Structures are given as C-alpha cells and as structure tokens.
Length: 357
Image (cartoon, rainbow, N blue to C red; front, side):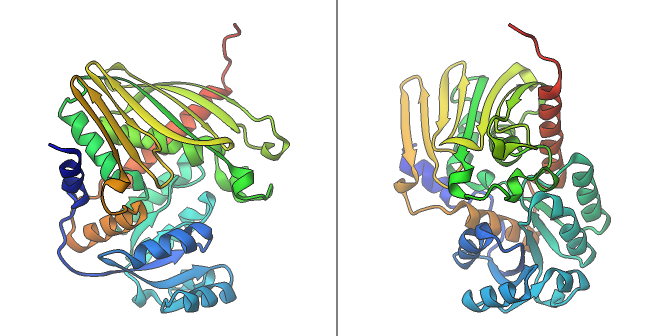
C-alpha cells in the first residue's frame, strides 16, 4: 500500500461508529489550552458543540462565552450547583491536576459523560476515587490521550500489529520543552507540587511516551528504574526538572524515556524491532511525522501528506462517537489509572537508593 493510501485509510477514522448526532460539551477550566486549542477544535468537529464555559471568574466565563459564541458562561460554584446542567451532555475537565476529582464527581452525579485531561489527578489515590465516582454513577469516562486518535500513531500500531518490523525489542521516548520560556511564571501550577502531583516533567511530558508506548505495543510495564534531578531554583519542590526512566514491558521489551521541563523542545518515539524500526518525530506536540524502515520498505509520512489533522478535534469527536453509539472507550478510566500507578512507581524508584559508579 502506498503512503498516501495508508494515510487515507486511517484519516477516514477507522474508529468511527456514529453517522450523525451532536454531543454538547461544557468546558471546565478556561486556561490557554482550552481557549486556544479545545474551543477551535470543537468548532471544527463533526459531532461536537460547546454550549457552556466554566471558570472561577464569572466575568471571564461570560466574556469568553460571548467572544466564542457559546451559549452560556458559569462559575465553578454554579457548575457544582447544577446550573445549566440541561444545556450540556458531556464535560471536558482541563483544570490543574489536583482539581480534576471535584469536577468529575459533579459531572458523574449529574449523569454526564466525562472527558478528563491527563494525568487524571495528582495522586493514584485521588485517581482511584475519580474512576470509582464515574463507575458508581455509570458515567462514561475517557482520559484525554489525544495521541491515540492521531492517524499516524494508529498507522504505526497497525504496522506493529501486522509484524512489519518483526518482534518489538526496545523503545526510546523523549519529551522536553522550555516551560519557563513558554509560560514565564515561576508560580505557575505545573511547578506547584500541591497542584501538579508527583512532579512536573514525568506527569506532564513523560506520560506521552508512556501511554503511547502502552497503546502501540498493547503491553504493560512490569519493572522500573529511574533517576531525577532538579537544579534550577524555580523547580524547588518538584524533583524532576530532568528525568530518565527504564521500564521493562511484558515480553521483555525495553523502554527508555527522558523528559524535562527545562530543555530544548524535542518529541520523539522510536520502536526498534527484530526486522525494522518505526519512528515518530516530532511525536507529541501537535505535529507528527512517521518513518518506517523494514527490509526494502522505507516510508516517510508527514501531516502535509493530506489535509491537516487536529488531534484535539479527533479526540473530542472520538468521545462524542462513543457517547452517541455506546461503543467501547479505549482510553477509559482504568486505562488512565494504570498510567498514574506507573508514574508513582517511577518517582518511587527515583527516590530509592541508587548504585554509585
């Protein structure tokens, strides 16, 4: 199959089960990601509409609702009181990690579908409570792993499943960015351990390598080694300004990953097998390029191959599709909870006594 034909096969949404219908979203947490990324993605979607915006500020919620032609803006307090609950079907939670549980619990009690940003919460214990709340109220829960709906990631999974590169042997993942250049505020929530959780780099960046590898290999890690350091004063309180970790996956697939919030931007994921290699680079920050080398096969694909793909649009439509048809949700709450357990284990491994060389 030619690269263009392969792309078209997955661009046509191999996951789609719905043919029509609309899911109305309430967006909880109006930071830049929601306003600059999520709102435009929903506007371009097939099955979604934003009808309610929720913020801690009544002025901000109303102003952004007016600016984006959204039906209503309400406060967090009003949201918890059930104001406008009949005006949305699902909730997208994009607050700092430590606040996810509160908003998800309310959505579950109101009988709404929940699309919760990753990581699910600031700790395994709170993530467990989040999952249990949705299960108790029979509320559909999806964790926002947008990489799982990217066509190139899905192509890579198909090639792996078909054995194109033989048996997977090892994986290398990297996700780095200069956080304080992007958001020049040392008091931001990603540097506050009470809000971010176990740390900053693995929670916010390393999770991409971890979850995408779990998805691609359809395997789970069984052992972990890790090392972390924080050298810049702005990272006092979080221990992983720089991090590296080794996970041994089922079938002895070795996974090495690095992540840092204070480094040149780089995103990549490389899977090496007994007969070839698949590489995604860039991998995680909205642009994905795919390279495949196996025997006589040598393919390079970029999103420019076809119409631009918006991972967030695909993510919102995927969840809407599941709500409209009742189809199984891939990255559900239990799937996301496993990532939290892995991240906790990485931090515990890094805190353990290492071997001096």
